[in-house]
Image 1 (cartoon, rainbow, N blue to C red):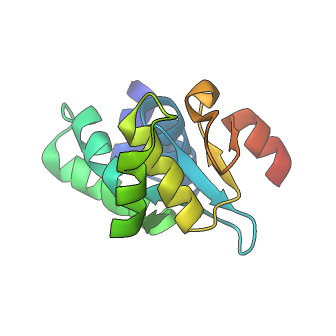
Image 2 (spheres, rainbow, N blue to C red):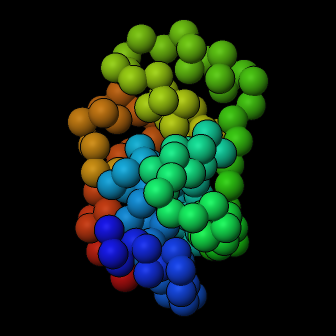
Image 3 (spheres, rainbow, N blue to C red):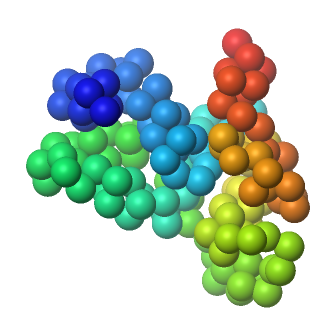
Length: 138
């Protein structure tokens, strides 16, 4: 927890992304990645989860941290059609995972980066673990 607090309080450019990747892959369901152009995406509906996870951090620090995460990661929203499709999907155990899948497909993500690979077995977009993703981009 101490390292995450440091990233939130004294962020450096290389720490924003590492911190965001850490939070989104361990504490939040997923982070998306697009190969061309290369960038990472977080879903709009994941941001309130992050806010809640950081609830013990002072509000101004949380705001700064979220602002910095959103400067480094693109924020994606799902269309009404994608949400309606997710509602009808019965091949996921968790509705939030359905939303992640629909959003990943809608933005043409190459990967859903997550530590919960099993939760995304039915995903249209391939799910990979953070370590595997880091090997692919290096």
